Length: 382
Length: 133
Image 1 (tube, rainbow over the protein chains, first blue to last red):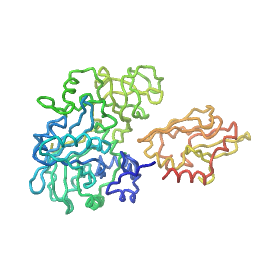
Image 2 (tube, rainbow over the protein chains, first blue to last red; image 1 turned 135 degrees about the vertical axis):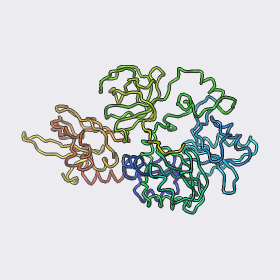
Image 3 (cartoon, rainbow over the protein chains, first blue to last red; image 1 turned 180 degrees about the horizontal axis):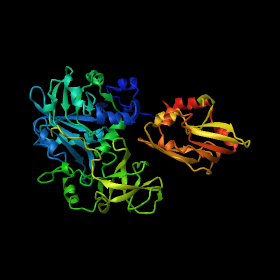
Image 4 (spheres, helix red, strand yellow; image 1 turned 45 degrees about the horizontal axis):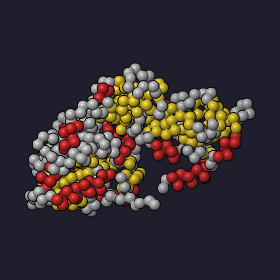
């Protein structure tokens, strides 16, 4: 029996404006409105809008919230100043990744501080189940799942700030990268954060579920092009950002995933910290790499990565697998196929010539530095 | 070619049957507009070689979009007698003119019985309407 899909407050808008709706983690979400490439390029060259209301939003209140979150995630967060946002991971006892999250430390208009954790839609129930008993045991902290009360949209691209600024009294150019604040957005209370998942400058907005459609329409009217999950995936892949369920899962730890920057082990204790201390000593584990291909055939998730240089395009598969592709696409910006995957350390150095088994025929690939695409950061405050 | 006059495979290839000079029949094969709209953002097509013999239902090539890869299946039994060689360099002609400039291969039929498994336009439209939901 089919289960009814959850709908975001923008669902009717998507359906009325040509959104091709798909099931994504139990939500009915638009994969594209026009074409993935058109929406992708509009993000790189102008501005686009993404409905990301399906992501989970968990709010933490109380004087114990900072210490509680610090005991929950891989990264030190208790020292976050008001307005700061950090990328972190929640790991299981073996150090495997339960989810990658954003932790916000914010203040309401009255100056009272609270914390927000944004989690992947596919992991929301799992993380709520993980956090609830721990919150119950902790001192002076409460958690509320506000996913359905609030909605979330992203406006991304070089024109994003210009289009958003007229809707809010917050001077967005004073907002540093990975910072956010409560403000008014088109007359409604909400949060503006200078974050995103596309590799471009831009903001993510958190608004009441009733306010979001008006703000979305205002941004469309101002010239932002609606974009779907298809473009979101090609954009994040070009930006070298891991995606849960592809680059990240419960049997991959943050260190092999190349996310060591989001792990603080010294003097800290959290779920998985002991395992991660042991794993940090083990250097022979696979690691995440970026790959580019010269041909047109596209590597997809699950394809084998093969050892060996000087393999001709289309050659029969003869060499041994050294790893597996976790995400692959045709990069609209770079005009070539790109992929991320995990390979043995001996094959992970930038410049290593490898090959990918694309449906029985080998195609040459090369390990490249991540990200594949880096925007011109001139003028961006970090 | 008018889409109403063509035959269709369940896997979204279209077929136009024409007589050739030897009294045999040649099938021109392409991909329906419905399938091309679902694919979007094409990046690559692989074509078979002239002379290859095909069975109905056999994969003869592949087409990739940014999003996914799909096999191309022969709707008929026969031998490839012509391939649209310039198509990989002008992929835009596929969605622009799927029943004309977007033809893919021509296959000389070895056996006409495979034609009985193909749908007419009305039946194919019904299938697309069901898949669209």
